[in-house]
Image (tube, rainbow, N blue to C red; front, side, top):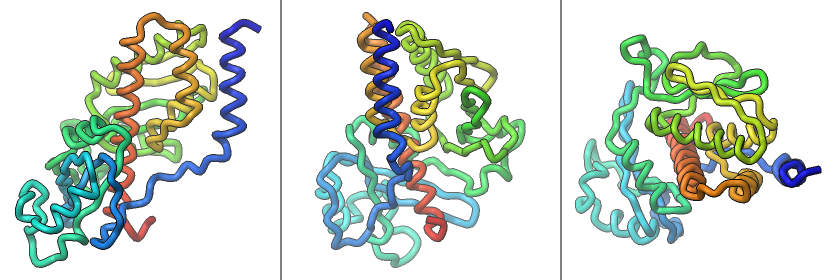
Length: 270
């Protein structure tokens, strides 16, 4: 058995020993009780304004959620971008929510992509050829999966709506880099880049499952980190490796945040 096979077998063993027992559930929506003990960690503080047909996410990047939450509650008029004083006498604390991240740059990415954007609540009803929607879509395929950057696929039990996860060209570039790194490590992976969609296939099943979990659940597991350790041992282009790693981390953070926003919009379904 050569080194690559050994590393893959070790990662595969780790997958079955540790990952299968994990509960793949999105993070719960944040408690907006003003008396709550908010985390002293970086993240986003946000306010969702909702009508019958659209919603808008007002976000604020925070390096310390606890400190900023207390400041906002004490003087919401000092934070006009959150629009907390519009539309009546609702309690400010009940409108504010938070989302934690590992790295402040992830909060910046989410803010840049989603702050002040208007999203239709019933996106599928409005999509057409001239306006194909904002969401990415994941569809499970034989021996792989497909990411569509617009609503250009027929919905099925194998299709998951992912939300607005970012720029298509940036995504394709990083997906191709990831496939190149995997191939250079001696592990086959095929990526097919078509119009508004990318398909991943012909690879070790556990690697595809790990990558799919990044899209579907916003999860970066220890197994996925182990995969990148394998790639790091087989490449001399560490800049490319690091750029791909950070991109996938940021994409996962956007996906986790969007899952939480869906919980906020539909609390009765949680």
